[in-house]
Image 1 (cartoon, helix red, strand yellow):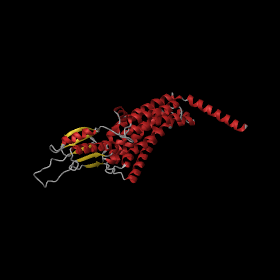
Image 2 (cartoon, rainbow, N blue to C red):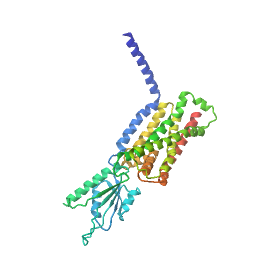
Image 3 (cartoon, one colour):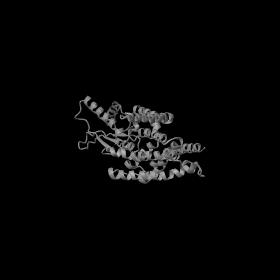
Image 4 (tube, rainbow, N blue to C red):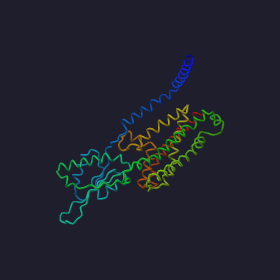
Length: 370
C-alpha cells in the first residue's frame, strides 16, 4: 500500500510544480484562451457559406427580355448588378476581367418575319475559380426564374439557359483548394521556422555565442532567413509540381512569375516568425504566436471560405494578409491564365507586409540584445 501512495504523492508533487510553472507563464495562458476566442468570433461572424451580394453584369442585344431578367435577378436577393446595359459579349468580358462573378448574355429579340432565323439561347457565364462563392447565388437565380415562369404559366415555353463555367468547367474541388494550398503550406512552414529560430538558440545555450560575435541585428536577420527563404521557394515549387501531376491543373499563366514571387512571400512570414521568436520567452510562446497568426489567415484569405461572403471588416483584415494575395495569384496563374503583371500587383501588399514584419523583427531583436 505504501508504494502506490508514494507514487501518487510524487505525481501530485510534479503536477503541482507544473501547474505553478504554467500559471507563471501568463503569456502562454493568455494565448491558450485568446486563440479559441478569436476562432469562435471568426467562425461565427466572418465565415459565410452563403455569400451575397454577388457581382453580376448583364449584356443585351436590343430590347430583348432584359426587363424580365432584371426582375428575376432582383427577386433572387443574391446579386448586385454592376452593369446592366452592356453590349453583347461584354458581360463575358466583365467576368474574365474580374469585374463580375456572373454575367448574363441575353439574345436578340426573335425575328418573327424570318422563320428560318436560329433561336439563340440566353447564356450565363460564371467565374468558377471559387465555385463556393457563386453556387448558392446561381441556385437562387434558377429558383427565381422558375417562379417567374410559373407565374406566367409558361413553364414549357421558357427559354433554356446555357451556363458556361469559366476556369473550372467541371467544378472540381481540387482545382479550387490546391492553388491556395501552395501558399498555405509555405506560410505555415516559414512561420514555424522563423518562430523557432532565436528562441531555440536561447534554450540550447548558443545565444551567448551569437551575442559574442560582431553580428548586428540586420546581419542576423538576413543570415538566418536567407537559407529558409530558398527552402520556402523550393517547397512551393515542389507542391506546385506535385499538384500539376496529380490534379492536372491547367497552369495556363506565367508560372515563372509565380515562382519568382514565392521568395518574397516566404520572407514575409519568416520575418514575422523571427519577430515572434525574438519576443517570446520560450518555444511554446513562439509557436503560439505563429498559430495566433496563421489560423485567422486560413479563414480570412479566401482559401477555405468564399472571400466575397465575408463582412466588410473581415475583408479589410484579409486584404492585409499575405495568404489572401497568394491565393489570388496562384488561382490567377493556374486557372485563369494571368501573367506577370497580375502576380506583381498581388505581391505589392505582400512586400509592404514583409517590410513591416522585418522592421518589427529588427526592433525586437535589438531589444533582446540590449
